[in-house]
Length: 265
Length: 248
Image (cartoon, rainbow over all chains, first blue to last red):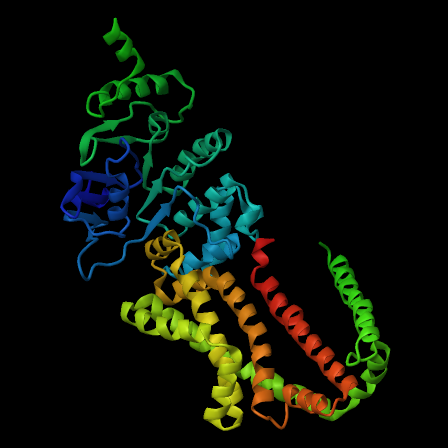
């Protein structure tokens, strides 16, 4: 593995708010084309982590290196990132095409290639027919597809996804989840995917960074031992899910039903 | 509601006015006969003097409103971005908001001594706080999540203002503009009457009133209503429909 394979390097990252730590210490690397899920209990500092990885908030301590460039140095280059938010955050007063064009207008992508690029991405996400539609006319799943298209469009170093399927109904989430790995493989995107769903993380990710309770550190860097393509309802997915639940029970302070029964027995 | 249906309801609303007008005419001495007023309407509209007076008032309203909008937008942005300016300008905005239109009209006319600038100034003075307060409220409710979006995708200040902030505050802007526009028409007539203007709607109306030319008084009232309605429905609402076409 060469160093150029590393897209994101986080070294000794710490975040505090007024002296109260949200992230204790994070060290990890993500390689090009990897799909890494971040799993952590509520309040473990996932939002703070996403804010620092997206360039929105400087960490209190440590470094974030994107494609070899320090993110928080005074003269550092702005990284090309994609971000898929929990809610789509499309501009309702711009059509799908206009939403995508706005992001391109701020990038270095030559204008003459915009049209073809937009067509290609919309085709990959199966939403070509909505190119000139207003976001209000789209369903939740279609809006989230546009949001993913927007993130992919600028050929980002990596894409941050903050529980992008959590606001969708189960059927829509299932179908998008199924397509997501294919889309990422086809585009070669590197993804940092934050989720509360262990099964979702197992299904989608190559690696799962399991965080401790806040102020967080990495409790385990878990390599998902299942080859692709995967089936969401496959028994092996459930086995790995159960294995992770067993591992996090103590560090997350979970009180699982079987544990309670055993205690009362 | 379809356009034809909308028009039918508007026409009905206008027609309902006629019986009320006729009853008032039958029971008072100073309300003119609607039939007589409508009979004089073609000649009134054919008179170039009518259009001159309308044009003068329209110009005063448009110029005053433009100035008021510009001042209001500036004040709103200044109040949003500076704590000191928020405090300082806040007092002026509140004072202007509470000043009765008639007092503002008299003061402006006295200060500018009946000069054309006085009429423009009074419209601007009365309308600017509505714009400032409306837009300030819009800016204060600006979506933090969309600001983050702009930051992540490096949109820069100009693109953020043009494509995110401005469309976001547009509903607040239009709401303020409608209020300011309605107020502008009310205050200009008062200013023209108090300022003893020689031309303009208020001047023509006052002349007709002083000489008890009741048919002419009613004709001017009709014209006034028509102008205000055309401006509201023909310009502002159409513009609003275009700007908010994404709402479907």
